[in-house]
Length: 213
Image (cartoon, rainbow, N blue to C red; front, side, top):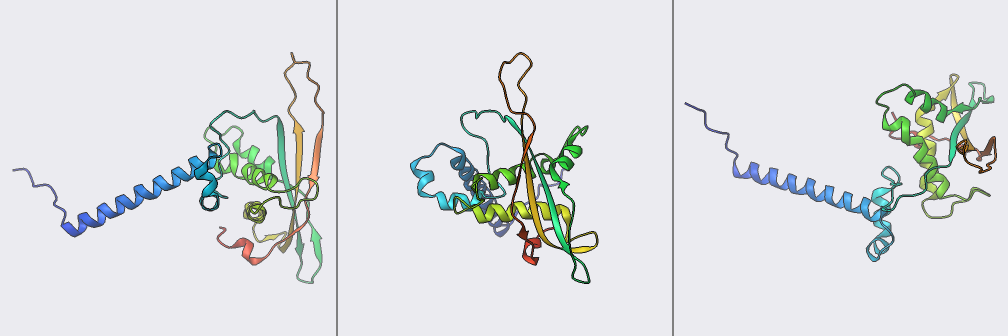
């Protein structure tokens, strides 16, 4: 004789139904926010812009559009260095570390590279660059502070709390931009070489490590 199927009690069914409705509703709101953030400006996205930014930025920023954008025409590399303080209060400026170069090394020859190696640092820089002036580094909108803190935390997660056995006091970023060469058959002339841009030193405090592994 076959065993009877499991029977759920009414309270259990109510809890499961409520949980399923909550998950589906939350997923719908999240996907809707991502869609509105990437869609062309409209009455709904403009009215709820603050709420949409709170859901999407910085972790879920989207760089796709409903219409295909121009392909990237530059290679961008992000380097960082830190200043540390020794036990006898001497400050040392460490060498530049190629963060982008490390990501590329982790991706090369890897048949299934991770999202962190491919996109995290690149998107963090894009977010910062889009919210700050290239001339003086000042924020151009209300997301500027968030973008700066996000970029700093992405780098500090890779450095850790110390360098050379000394506590990190400050961090500085250097970004190199090189134009991708056109194909051999093209007559287009592009500048050669890499142009570097150095940001100011940013102080590092205990709050910058909150939540980092």
